[in-house]
Image (cartoon, rainbow, N blue to C red; front, side, top):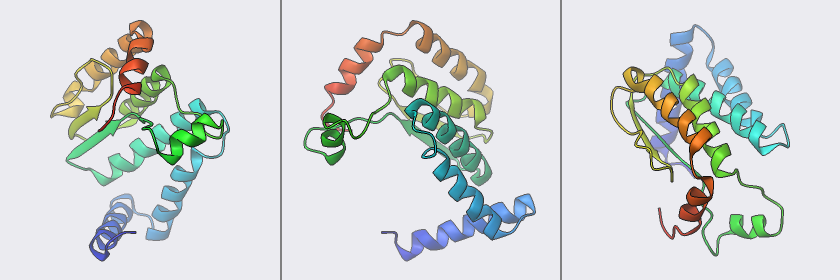
Length: 163
């Protein structure tokens, strides 16, 4: 559930996006819903992740936040999502797929912000002036995708017990 304050803030953001893009608030809501639904339309988790990353970056860019944070999914013991994974009802992305998803998000993010990430990768991507650092972030992610030790990253994630 959202508080009244959070709902008012969301409506304010929707109004601002509509004004900035010369569209109706209903068009903004429709586009946001399409963006959220896009990740659910293809059964391949990697395709869902790519679509989700692109649409999320588009929405973040329209909102022009001062801080954008990212992180990879960690499945903790005793959680319903881990139980679904163990039953084969949910397939999480691999470490490599999560890095590709983050790279896709970064490639499509166009707002200048403080970029903060909590990924298991050892590369340091967090910091201010995102647009000035964007190309270097993409290069670092691509290097990690091509040369990173995915087994080590998976082991780090598996051993996490808290965020």
